[in-house]
Length: 73
Image 1 (cartoon, helix red, strand yellow):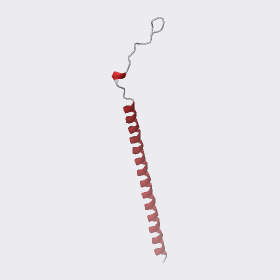
Image 2 (cartoon, helix red, strand yellow):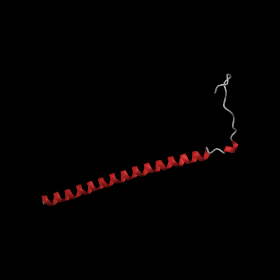
Image 3 (cartoon, helix red, strand yellow):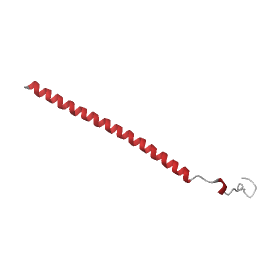
């Protein structure tokens, strides 16, 4: 009788350990996925900023360097 009870307890503990391991794997995968998504969002934001800040050289007004009163830059 005790052997049967011990075997059942071992089986339950094994199931609990397997479930915890699976849960840890899922958490690790979720963290990795989140990191990848964060990097992609950052890359997207950078791309959007580059597009917005893309300056048309024909519209830029070029001026000479600002000179001090004594002629130095």
